[in-house]
Each structure stands twice: as C-alpha cells, then as structure tokens.
Amino acid sequence: MITETRLKTALLGSGAAFALLAGPAFADEVGTLKSQIDALQNRLDQIETQQTKASATRVAPAQAVTGGEFPGSWKLPGSDTSISFSGYVKADAMFTFNRQHTAVGNSFNVSSIPADGAVAENQGGDFRLHAMQSRIRFDSRTPTDWGSLRTRLEGDFEGAGGNQRFSNSNTLRMRHAWGQLGPVLAGQTWSTFMDQDTFFDTVDFTGTAGQEFARQAQIRYTASLHKEVSVDLAIENSEDINLRNVANAAATNANFQNKLPDFVAALRWRPSWGAVNVSGVLRHFTYDDGAGAEDSAIGGGGHLGVTLKTWGKDYIGVVGNLGKGLGRYLTSAAALDYIVTCENNRSGTSGNFGMVAGCGADIETPTTYGAWASYTHFWTDTLRSSAIFGMGGTKVDVSKLGNAARGRAEATRTVHANLMWSPVSRVTIGAEFMYGWVYFANNNGANTDSDGNAGRLQLGLQYNF
Image (cartoon, rainbow, N blue to C red; front, side, top):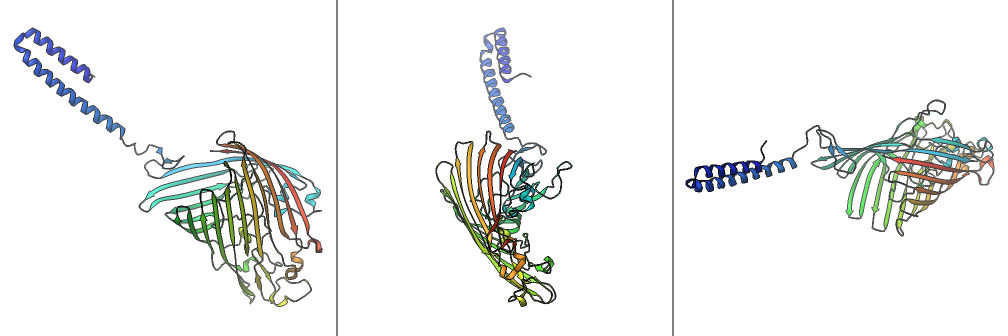
C-alpha cells in the first residue's frame, strides 16, 4: 500500500520528469499540478485524523470484558452491571489453656467456659487448627434511573456440618445478602443497632465480651442530615436467636411468638477526629401456650460508641450497651432476652418457680449490659497491636427461677492483646493472647461468685484476594 508521502513524492517526480521532457511550455502547468497534489495531501491528512479519532472512541464488542465502575470490579459482557469477587483464606492455629477448645469453641466464646472443677477443666488444654473463617463475597453496582443499585452476597464456612475424622468439611453459611437502591436497603446484614465505626482488631473471630453483634434480615432507610451526620431507621427480624430462657421445659419454644419486628434507629456522626454512634432498639415479647397462660412485655436498649483518633494511625474505641431484653444483640454477655415464670406461684418457697400446667405466665425482661474499650497502635506502616478489655452480663433473679438459675453464666470478662504484621498488602499474620472469666449465678447452691476461666494463644494467617 502506497503511503501519503510516497504518493506525493511519486506525483511530484512524475510531474518534474514530464516538464523536462515537454519543455518550457509546460512550466505553468507543473505549478498547477503541485497545487493539486498539496490539496490531495491535505485531504489525506484529514482522513487520517478522522480514522485516529474513531479508533480512540471505538466501543468494545458486546461480549468483551471491561473494567467496572468501582475498584476491583469488571462489567458483565453485554451489560452495564459491574461486579467483583473478593474475600480471603484464613488459617487459625490455637492452643487453649486449662480447658478443651471444644468447651470454649473454635472462636473464643467466654460465656461457654465451664465452671471450675468441670470435666473439661480436668482434661487440660488442647490444640486446634482450622480454616473455617475463610470468606467469599460478591458485590455489584448497576446504574438505574433512581441511582446506583448495589447488592452483596457473602458467606463463610462457620456453618454446621463436617468433622475432623473425614475431610474436615465445613458448611458454607450466609453472612450477608442485601440490595440497596438509593436510601433503602433490604436483606440480611449487620443490625442497625451495631456500630461499625467503633470496632476492634482481633485475630479471634468472636472478639471481646460485651460487644453488640447481630446479622439479621431488615429493611433500612438511611438519610444524610449533614456531610458528617446520618440517621438510620429500620425494622428487623425479631426472632430470638439466643436461648429462650425459661425455668423448665414446660415453657416450650413453640409458646413464644413474635408479633412485631424489632424497631431500630441510629444516629451517626463521623467528624475528622473519629466517630460517634448512638443507637437504640425497641422490642416486643409474647408468650401464649394456648391454654390460658399468656403474657407480653416490652424490651429494648441503647448503645453509645466513640472512636477517637490519637496520633498517626492510632485510635481508641469505647462502647457501652445497656437495656432490658437486649440479649440477642450482645455477644459473650451471658445475655438473656427474657424469662418466664409461673404467675400464680411467685410467692412460693419450694423453688418450683418454673412453668407448670395452669399456673399462668409472667414475662420479665432482665437487665443486660455490655461494655468494652480498645486501643490500636501502629508500630510501623505494616506492624500494629491492639489491646481490648470487655465485660458483659445479665442479672439472673434466683428468687424467681429457683434451681433453674443455678449454674447459669451471669457475667463475663475478657482481655485480648495481639500483634499484627502485614508484610505485603494482601497478607496479615497475627498472634494473639486472650483470657476470659465467667461468673455463675449461685453455682451449686452457694451464695458466692463461683467462676470459670480459660486462656488461649492463637496464630492467624489471612490471605486476601
């Protein structure tokens, strides 16, 4: 193919040769020919410019994969939906002191620590290695006339199933499954009562006692009041996931009803120096055995969390939770949602204060509390440490529940201290020591604070993708 330059050179050369052969009579015609060639060159330059612009703005084929609208995402072929696939693989190795890990849990659940002198204490400590916390996540963004439609589907392998005898299989469970268009979110995710700004950094999956922690189905509306202030309003699933705590088996789970959702509100302030979160929940409880024993009660509680940036990347977190019937929203707090006693036998002295046929029903929502404080220090950009102290509990009224209350966890305390190293951006290696105490209500009938305790040393290796 002859380029524009070669074409121009050929034409000029041909014209010059022709002029020499033809003589002076044709000199003026050569000048005319040169002007025509210049015009032709200008036209070729215009065509070349148009072709360059067309190549730069050419639309990718409908089946091509292109970059998405948020970091790490790509667009589905033939669609304007951007998706991403992310998560991590995490291996946890742990040694539990003076208790078997099966008694405390694969995550350090302090409220499950058995009492002093129990078989699990006499057996001493043991070792455990698993990868159950490993996680997968799908996110999407789709532009619509009402703004960006967002979705998330996330799971881990902390579900039931599997054993250590054959393949160590663990079941995938749902953590998050929600969609959001504009200010409205619907699906399962963190409860609106939770405070994600004020949070701690632990190797252990469960974390400290007294923390607010719940994932559940909900419909949430979020409004921005200011560039630093927002408010959340939500209705959330009201099923009592924690134990339905009753005096004896006569008050069966089938007799508990959820007639209303949990109503939750939160005010969030995120200034440059940290964050302040205030939230509250209102709950309704109903008991009806279908034979005349019925009652209902109102419960709820509040949360206050403050994050304070100190120097560098260091920060302090302080949280307090308090309420009645707040059990399901707090972890490792020996928490109760409510208790049901026999209405017609509340003044008895025999200790038979549980539900029996024909005695009526009386629901009470015990006071539950939880609090924790943490400090995170960055030694370098890749090395950091956190120290956390947490406490929680629910006062069990032995005068109403009698022997049914004895031996039940009433209060918990935990301490965590760790060192986290991120040698590269997607890898974190952490070592953590944790210790927990649990206090029981009149254990073995004695009016003293009997307790159990356990410690654990854990190494976690997390690889993000």
